Image (cartoon, rainbow, N blue to C red; front, side):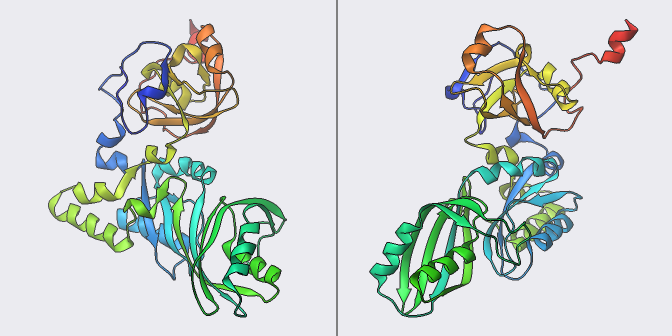
Length: 338
């Protein structure tokens, strides 16, 4: 039986096969033991100005005493704001955040005082698809590419200093955007402060951003009292990052086969998102709502319902460790012995 939780929304799922999950293995994402959460969690860190994103991740690993962590979307040393940090196997799912928009607040100096209406009108022309070439100091190849600006607005001004909000596609260089605005104005512009307030579905308005010293405090409280409330309020299940991705639930007996390289066949499927179309990116979950993998749909919902065999989804990114669930399949080697 499927349980409504943070990932598997029953109102969006079409039940294909009836099956139940065993309490003997796996965990509902919000019920994971702390050591398991440390392998499947995400922290919404509020990066301070100064350290690099790499240093923030290194400090996070040291504070938590773990060996594996990674971040989504590098922030320059001087930039503050949201730096999502995945822990353990959760790092494998961070790429999903690149599909959502990012929001920034920038303080820019336009090199000559200008009429605000002129600035606003020009910014309106920068919304939509724009061409950008990464700056010389960037870590990516300096090839011109297309990025989408969803919203660009001037919020406040003081003489020639302006507060700007940008909602954009991942991979947009805000400093370069400000520079280009200045070039079109004909007077030049420089960004000298930047803060990221949103990455995909995670936003500063949720109040879930945490600072490094909050994490240190939470770990010390746990060490001294074994109380987990504080640290659990900081480390979120990675499944939260997959909100909005189409869902597919599979049988317990199919999970370990997927973790050992099998593809998602129709007999192992329990439920599929009602909006599924061929070619869609989907998240494959256990019946407890644990993320197993990201996959691409080879069939639409009607094809899956009409057939009793076939490969319905091709795994693109495996996230769950093998042997988390018991083996419910036979290897070719075992079959040959029989």
